Image 1: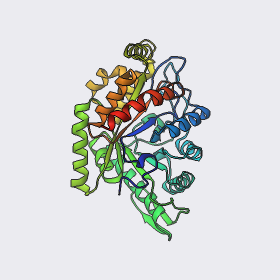
Image 2 (image 1 turned 180 degrees about the vertical axis):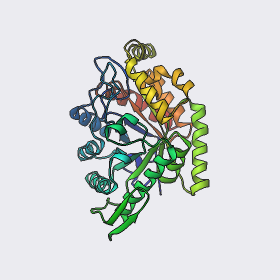
Image 3 (image 1 turned 135 degrees about the horizontal axis):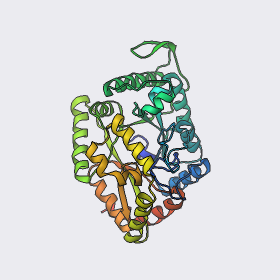
Image 4 (image 1 turned 180 degrees about the horizontal axis):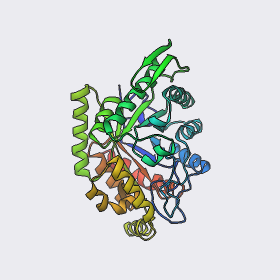
Length: 368
């Protein structure tokens, strides 16, 4: 599956891709109690999406969240459902790619195929799908389901789910399906997605998850601990995709941005919201669940990166002046990553400054 399909649109532009992450969730990625913490209202999301669209941001990627972490702040206490969110934003933007993030266990593939085809038509092909095979056990229990303890079982379910969705997109005649998890009779779905099928993204940390991603997705979304490790991981994943499945894949990182006119101002604000005013109850709850069920980080990394969890859900920090942040984006690009999705404490307050001051600097650096 070709990476570049519609070269003028969103994530298909052949550049280092920049995206906004988690704007649909209260708090974004910042586990903090500061009053300016992101409320994630629809109106604020619409405004941010339209600024991003006008300024050349490539994509928007949401987190699918169904309940919060019982902290002292607003972190993920509220979130906009991602397929509704994506479809609505596609209707009010023109260029960027908008993803829906979908838990396969919570959404039947026949319903999903039609939802996604509808969104793809609204966005004229700018819709993307982030497939989640499951890790948050409290949410599973809320749905009356049990989280499979074996990662292999979660991804076997996800593989069958995605095979059905793709077959519904591709086939014109009804078909029966007799699988391990689904039994379908005369399954059919119309309309189909316009043109190429939606881009598929998958976040992966375990060995089983990485193998699923390099087999099934266009983009693998991975944690970013340090840049040397990122460079090795990108090369390894791309080589494995070719070796095992004879296909190419691109890798995206994830971060959080604090940009102020001077480095000291940025570092002071980072300390203020991610240390002095951190929601440590929420941080510890998030780390506990992720450590037990997702295994995205080792126990040692969890403790070492505790302030990163308060600052941005454990993601890579880009903190400093516009020159600092632009230079760090360039270093991330040099690892071989295809792009990065990032968050702010308050997207509407901070994105315009990022677009005005960081983007021009980064584009000048990247052009040399």
